[in-house]
Every structure is written in C-alpha cells, then in structure tokens.
Image (cartoon, rainbow, N blue to C red):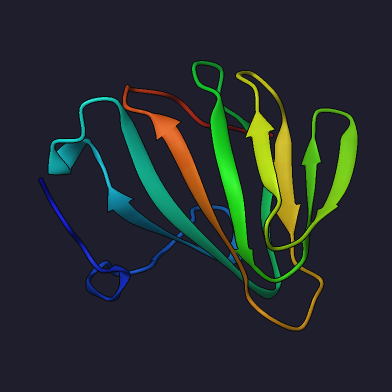
Length: 118
C-alpha cells in the first residue's frame, strides 16, 4: 500500500505544452500493478497540443475549471464533474481560455506507451 499527497509530487511542465503541468501521483514506480493516476493542471491561456497514444486508452475526470478538449473530430467544452474517455490512437488536445486553472485526473493502463505529437 502507498499513500501520497499531491503536495509531495512536484508538477512537471509537459513537453511541447504552454503552461500545462503533470503530477504523477501513483505510477508503476510506486508498484501499481494495473494503472497509473496523474493530475494535470493547465493554467489560464495554457494548452496541450494535439497528440495521440496508439497503444492506450485513458480516462479523465475534471476537478476544476472549464476548458476545451478536442477528441478525434469533436470539440467539447468540459467542466467539473465531467468524465472523459479517450480511445487508443485518437488525436486529442486541450486549451484553457478561462481565467482559472483547469485541473483533471487522468488514469492510464500501466504499460509502456508512446506519445505522438502532431
């Protein structure tokens, strides 16, 4: 068993992003056998550019803020309480044009995967 507090996990700037950060809360390095939990924060005016992960699906849960996410050909404005499924090999991006941080949790399968930036 492991318990971590987000305050002990340094936010890391996401490569290629603008003012978007990831905190790996529980990962394979903590001994998680099946999944990993990450927290993302996108500052106002920030964005994560279009990319895809061929090998994995992932689910997300919006905690704070409102932001835009494009999944495949559809653009969605999401808010706290929304849950999102991004299938494998699906292009997606995020933009926060609001005036507060956008924060969401992301759960992925615990296995090696690639990120292809577009």
